[in-house]
Length: 195
Figure (spheres, rainbow, N blue to C red):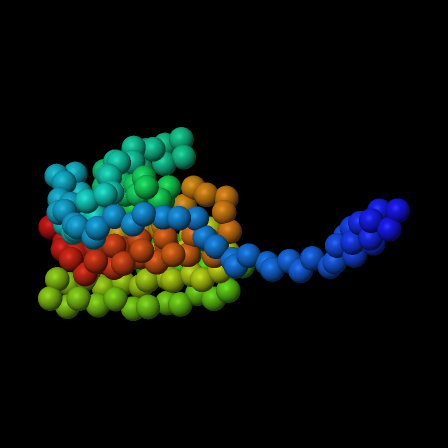
């Protein structure tokens, strides 16, 4: 009988022990980043030339809602490994008013994301040698598009781009991927030439 009583007391003491749980650290999905290699993008339908990543694909955009795009040089740069797309639209400037309208539209489209973004950083771009200038909109936070830009020569050409991801994950989970692709887009702008 003493053995049974000792066993019951031992089980009771063991069962009453408080378990201490340690929370797991915050993690992100594992992403295998490809090596940074670039190829030249130069197509007859588009008056631009620049470097794009080898792991990206180009798709010519042929629709604008239910109509035709304003230019033949509307294209999308797909990043299939990351479910991201850089939407690029080119407009030929016909007079000063259309340049002003294009710039105003670029600001309007970028700042629509300001409601969800923590902040918007506007970074001026200038390459006097190639006559390329513009603005980069770097959006931090829960914005649908973390990176947008426009480039122009202020007389004939205007190109606008915006990066989107097809993902329902949290913005902080996509942030490392967005930073990786931003480097590619900056390289694209640094090698940009009007044809």
